[in-house]
Length: 432
Image (cartoon, rainbow, N blue to C red; front, top):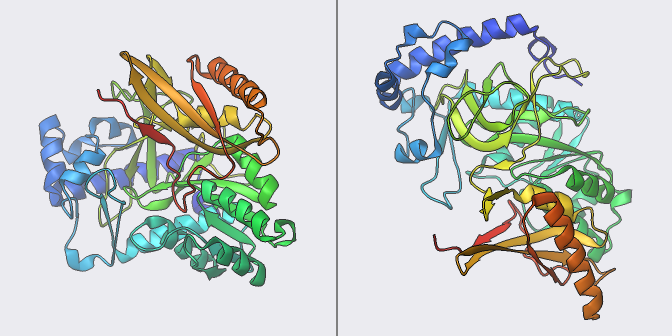
């Protein structure tokens, strides 16, 4: 189902005209109202009048997470604070939080793009949306909430955690839709098994999963255990929250809402803009956001834009599901390793759960990667030879896929810490 047929099926030439007009307006506004951007554009000797069309976007400066931290809390505000109706921030676990400020028009925009997102998976006003994303300063909870409300669906604002209660509510209220992180979804499946909930008898039909990278193998795992269709969604606090892009029911790439968020793919080292189909770092410009509009935000997410139109009828370009991040990319003895690559290998091994922890260390000046992998009850055994055989098999598979040797250590079922939000996958002990 297409929520906004007019805007989601714009012909390419009309979309480009709209993007060009919106970019010109945006650049003029931030130049006149945000000293940070005026300084950056002046350093590049770019004036608003130099931006004639969307093709000129590469003349504009990038914005980074550090820029947003340096201007904390409201240094990127593009209008008077009295017009701001809501604030969200990132967690700030790795530094100062980044702030996203919303006007009422921004909230309306957020509701619109999230209504598109939920409609892509088939949610209508007759559905019951169990929203297990965290509410509060985190954008996940309210983003889904606003979209479901725009559609007219019933929302259960249960937020994250309290898993037995989640399952009880899911059963009693016959939830048709689940929204949470993919790792928490699989944890819910474990709890359901332990507590005697029959997920097959639930009413779930679709789930919206994001806020952390996940693989195609994990999708199959989720769909098999939860008996629903798993939809990948994408968003980030720096831009608006969830609602930047989403899969349709074809489950083959995420449509970017290009009428509001202009995507580019760049070489993360040189900043050069790459062609559709070429893998690199995703950069996004908010074309219509009012409170804290952002020029060319470097997301650090690695993906590529898919050049072919989708058979669903939408005309916006799609991006491939995330392949990793430039900042959680591990370099092991000169080899780039993404957790998502390791996850794909693990999920192909029978008896292995999609829960793992990567421990990186350095011994005798050499990087060393240990992969702690959780077994399920079926293969858990006291026979050391049997476990060693499985460990060797996984080490061989990882070497074939990554081109680097790893040490695999099987650990007992449910011994790796679960998360109600983003799963922690990496411990890097290297002193560099």
